[in-house]
Image (tube, rainbow, N blue to C red; front, side, top):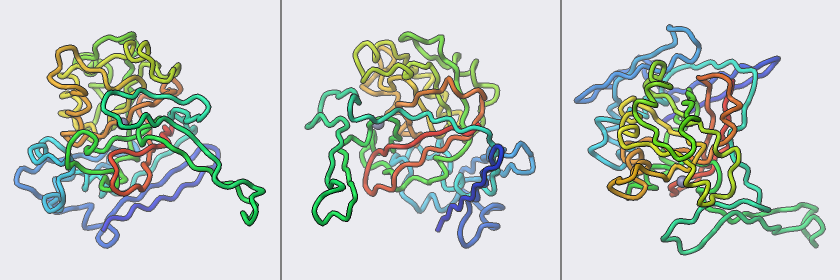
Length: 321
Ligand SMILES: [Zn+2]
């Protein structure tokens, strides 16, 4: 059984100490006997800046006994052992600033695209279920919301694109806390291709296996509810760029532009996000404020809700600098 304990204290700046380990066998897990037929060694991100904190792991046998993380048996060789990601030992993060990179969910004006196939065009609506002065209501106000799980900043589990793929509650929480790097792609606006060479140029020299990558264009700083103009101005990942991210061991790809655009001539609709899902890579669309991140490597925290049986969840995504 896995346990993630988090203690945080802030003084002038901040120190966040995260301990992720097996609740019963933490030391054994860190030295680990993780073995598989084709072991792939993963070096944990060096959160503290000290090499002594880096831990190498090989794939965990538990993964073989568990439901394939992505739901695609043929993707195991290229995916990371995310069970082991959650077993990486202590990570200490110091920070001076928390940058909110989440899109607002304002019921007065929120809107998002509704592609074909929906039975209901659910956007984001809020209603009062109990007023403060409701008879017998104990003086409380209670509201409810009607929304898609994909409204605003959110994460897509593999099941979103892969029938039978992992759902939100099956993903390790450690996926959603950890190192992220910013790929500055502002020159790809409007509507240009993001190629393998572009990614290699902007982040290739410091990308580490297990990183999260946030694709920055600043387009969502003026998000307009998902108009055709917004969509067409959004860049797109080429097929080779998508494969590059997978091969580099990226675990989450975040976007501050429309993530549904594909390279012209792609073999299927939503080809890029579908390919990422098939390889167990989580997509995190509808981010904003990436221009407020002034470091190229930050700690991302974007925890999904503990919803059982869903393909996606809203997140409050923040970057610690
Ligand atoms: Zn989504």
